[in-house]
Image (cartoon, rainbow, N blue to C red; front, side, top):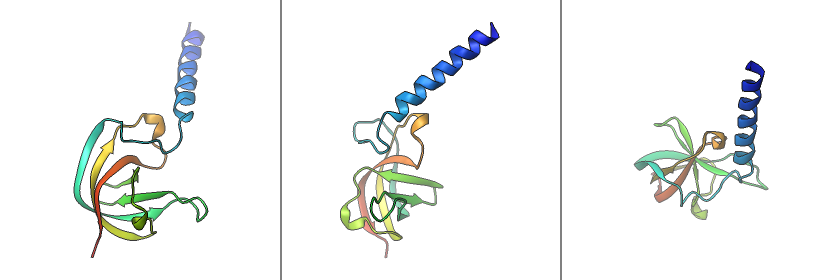
Length: 112
């Protein structure tokens, strides 16, 4: 009986992992449910990819998290750029949290 339960649990984990990894790393987040909104927060834009394949995120130190913006304007895609931003955090499945929280930017400006 214990072996059967273990097999069923393992099968469930494998199926869940396969469904989560079939999706691209940074899917469009606009259609997802908003789980929290941030207003007028300070952060730093970081390139966590390579020069050939950049992946930009906003390091939000007050919330101790990395935000993966779905719609970061190209003029803000500069490593170590301090910014003030507002936007919405979007829902994610537990298997998607690899590099940060999905995020949609509503407003952004350079921190002076």
